[in-house]
Length: 142
Length: 142
DNA sequence: AAACACCTTCGAGTGCACTTTAAGTCAAGT
DNA sequence: ACTTGACTTAAAGTGCACTCGAAGGTGTTT
Image (tube, rainbow over all chains, first blue to last red; front, side):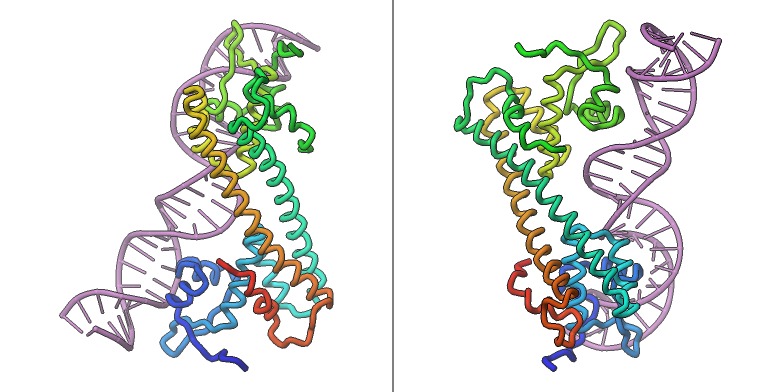
């Protein structure tokens, strides 16, 4: 054991994980996180919870929706038998995120070219003010 | 000249650029695009407009908001004197997009690790079911 | 003649993820 | 005593970017 006995009330916990107390209660309502209560019915959280919320934020950060997150949590609660499905959810999320990045990169490429054009690094003699776009059609798979 | 004399009505144009007619009218209301009208007051668009909408979609694709897009359009209408500001807007958008990608990559790294963990490629003997997170704290600058 | 595509204004609806308020209670700290 | 922070439920508000519908019109095509 490290120091897993530390307790945090919602306000402190909110600061630790970078969410508002509103959001934490909302996530609890949604079933994404759970909290224990002291004898006064006041929520408290532990370092475990910090890690769990951290993980949730990573999943959200890759674009996973609340609904999928709920599903994931439900599966997790059902034990190891659901690992294949959970793995599959993560893989799908990963694929989507990678596709998003690829698309973003493509759009960025156009932006960079336009900035270069503003900087005079690219041929200015073309009449059409947006014809750099033509040049970049080759990257355009959409 | 290539073949810049082709005219498209809104329905056809919508299909060409991948937006709905609703959205095209909405963008026009917002001042992002303009259309010419025939003698019956029916909108028509040209190949120029396809390129312009294409550019808009690239900017949106990098995360630029409608409001900023409006500002950009306004500046563009004011002529070359506003090029520095426009360039700066693009640079800012670029920076933001690059930051988004970096963050996404970081979250993805966690996801990939978790998938590996599910696949048994990573040590399974750790008791804490989410402790892979600890391992990745090093990437966590947020 | 009916269907279809276009036009107008303008307000309401959608989806997502919060965010806030209201209204009342409880308890610890300064 | 008062402020601060916690608690409850339920509902309304926010922001963004559409998306749609009503209601009435014109014009072209089948």
